[in-house]
Amino acid sequence: MSRPRMTLAHVISRNVISRLALVAAGLALGAATGTAAPATAAGAPGAKELRICASNVEAPFSTPDSSGFEDRVAKALAEAMGRKAVFVRSDQPGIYLVRDQLEKNNCDVVMGVDVGDERLLTSSPYYRTGYVLVTRADRNITTSDWQDPQIKDQTRFAVRFYSPAETMLKRIGRFEDNAAYMYSLVNFKSRRNQWIQVPGDRLVTEVSNGDADVAIAFAPEVARYVTKASTPLRMTVISTDVDRPNDKPIPMHYDQAIGVRKNDAALLAEINAGLQKARGQIEQILTDEGIPLLDPNT
Image 1 (cartoon, rainbow, N blue to C red):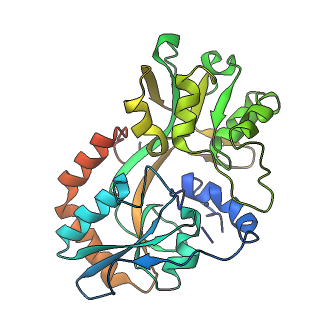
Image 2 (cartoon, rainbow, N blue to C red):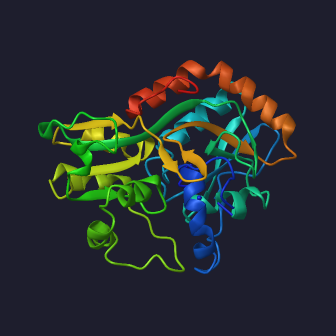
């Protein structure tokens, strides 16, 4: 979602604001869009299955053919647990997986949630990464500080809605004059009463084509497309948080975990053991995806 992306019933965590928590603001909007698409699973639930809540519309995290990087992590985890990975798929965006799938017992685990997500029990983190600045390599923009003149002096920014990037643009005085461009990325659809998001590949393409000077995104959303771009691009992990008056800063780095229902402590313990066993394989999947991995609590 987390993710994502997941990719929510995006309530915003009091203490954690991230790819998942920030899109929670869209939950109230999304609730008015209609009923959930029916979930489908390959096989019936069983004691030796790991039922994974998954979305068909959350590339590169999860895809219908299970080639998303979190799909592959889930399969590695299930194997380490001695279980069969069964993907319970929905055509809804990932923000609805907890509310409409996990909480209704259609599936048992949600990949890529923030450590400490208050809706869930969360596993030990299986990776840590952050928000990034994506620029063309030939622009030679090397700063990791979103407030640096190398960023502030740019004209056009490709960002996702409901993300820290919107706050950054407001702080550097680039939100209003960038608004028309931002909405052009979703064909000028209004985000009122509906969930609208800019795909990660579109953000990267805008920079690669020279239509945007900078893209600001959570690294897993764009890493695959940065590494595959025909134009050489630079992806720099943002080093500075976003300060907020009378509140905690919005952090730029996040530990990602696996979420289960709050009454599934036994499953959580099994997942934590599986994560330890599959750690090397999981790190290889993330590295192959091109995701910059950070040390814990950096």
